Image (cartoon, rainbow, N blue to C red; front, top):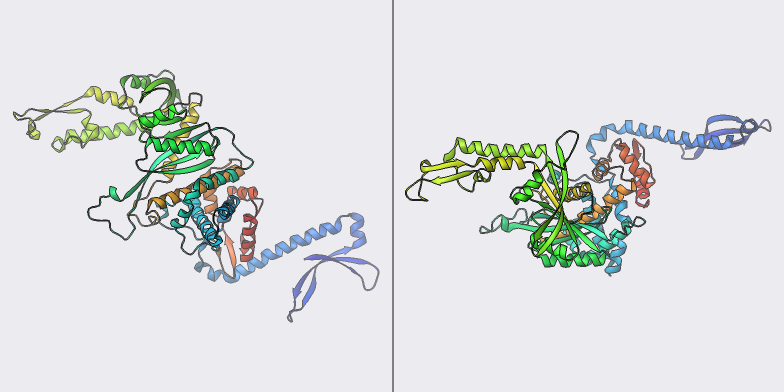
Length: 555
């Protein structure tokens, strides 16, 4: 609709109308009056901006009329609504984030064949979009991912082996991605954290049976994966280590990372299983550092006494958690390493540990005939077996005499619920150290491998190279998520942003008209961060395609 000014046929007056165009039965364009606004002279005399205001009113009327047309189409096509699947359009924002990293431009500099570049790039985009919704290894997906609104030029059958072509330039690509993703938000701190966790994957292709001589362990791929983060927790790199990687190989990889990212130090965060004495001593001797879990039960008596000493503990208001720190020195390898120990206790863990132990002891007391040394770890610590037979080692259960070590039991009960972290970083606050360790644990849970026999187990994870490719995808999705968090000033967590994008769905209800699910505030904030808006209940196919272009070109 628009404004027209016409002279009266019977006088010199100029009249103002809001009109709209339409086609008559012969498909000729005609105009019809929607609103008579009055004489031009009178309108402008009272308000010099009257015409501009009427033009804005005409635009508003056009918008309202379009909505009514959509509603009319909807009413005519409701009978088709059940046959159309619900599709996701939130992935437009993931596409935009991917393109903003300029991955394809990097590939063009390293591969001469453009067809290869395009295939790798579209495969990367396919997997990273899927990973952004639900990690490939998450067993809750059951192999089902949300259908997308119009296929965004994906390869017919994307495979992780395609991504394997970039492994030779992976480290350079990761540096490129880190630099582009954080342009304008550079971190000049020369110390980065390196979170290392262990994973295993089933390497037997589904539908194929392993050899009869092959054990379950033989069919597993064991890896350690390290994610390098800068001070602001922006992902810098991802490195996959094969099982059995030596301390020397680890130190060599750390040296490469320090050189590539111009770092003075790298601080490893890992659990006790990875933090061997040789690894920790080499880290310290080379000027690097660590945050590592430290055992409490099984530690020396002096360390346990320091843990149990109530002096210095700080409690939460509910009385369910406490922590303290103290400085000590520990002989690791040939190095006497100064450490800060952070001791923590939770009532939940204390109750859980005691319940499990007491159950095993009660089971033993109820059925001592079932006791076998080494099969009940909790019981073995306190139950001593005394062989009363004349021929030691050839006794029956009735000839054995059992005694209970109550002192060891009481000691372990006192230590229930305690756990400790040890770090070389004396000046970092306890809360930061704890958060670093918890972040490392979250990484382990986020990419925990699924049960290989469960329906929907990803078939891509067959070889070590496939696993490397998968973790590169994980790194890429992590970079994009972190960038999105920053774009929204860290108002929302990555999980909240993923959920909002995952739930941005629509359904074709006929005649290429889509019914859009109502979006929460977090999704509207994502739109604002991209400088776009799509606050609609219904939209046509062309409107959604136009919106997709706007989102992709926003960054």
